[in-house]
Amino acid sequence: MLLQHVGFLVIGVLICMNSSAQKTSERGERVDKSAPIVGRVLAEIGSLAFGAGLGPKYTTFIFGVEKDGVIAPVKVSYAFFKSQGPPPDSFFDHSKLYKLEALREPKCDETLSSLAQIKNVDESGKPLPPTNVLRLLDGAPKELLKPDLVLPCYVLRAGKYKLISQEKPNR
Image 1 (cartoon, helix red, strand yellow):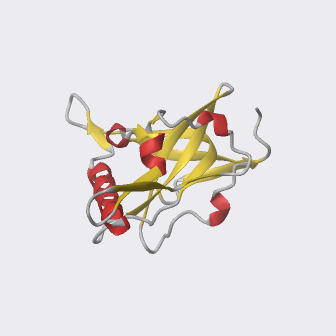
Image 2: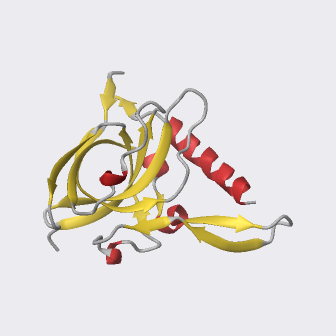
Image 3: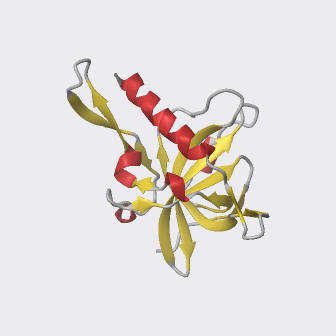
């Protein structure tokens, strides 16, 4: 049954990710919605990398955008091809400050609770306890991650991030 729910999750991610990361201007020109965001990784979403066919695969994490002393959690779907691979384990370190060249994608916004847990059912369809797939990184501020918080979604392509510094975050 867990595989069935993972399958539904994969379908949802694929639908979300298949939407274009570019929009059309009033004159019919393509407009890139890329915007650099600066901050730290707050949490990993423990799941398989998703993707089908020849397109990219995706993995997801929670990123804390830091601006004017305020930290705003966002969902980041990291898109990569098999030859590129997902971000290295060393990427998931809250002490590292990153600049991400990410694309805002409102169609895949979701609550933290829907992202952090996978619903499970038995063979008869009876609900089972959910599986928690959220792993908060050491040093990340736990109080920012409220279950009903709607996380704005960004798509980050492989290699479109830069380490700015490694230091203790200001809190």
